[in-house]
Image (cartoon, rainbow, N blue to C red; front, top):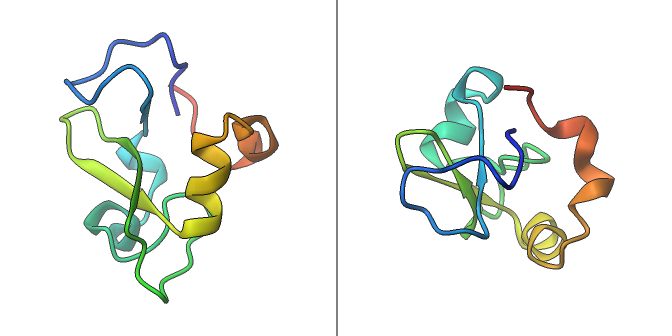
Length: 81
């Protein structure tokens, strides 16, 4: 995942940009959490976007941490540039 200061594709200043090469097809399609891979219940909370502006989703728990600015605890799950 890129730094928060990285310009995004129109997703807003609070979103993270995810490297699509580090995500599974299910995560890219919104069928799995972009952070923890959970598939059920289907993730519904936007947690960031791909470089092309497509939103990626997270489960309720991961989205809570992402929006609560506690994302440092997930550093291991984020892709590099």
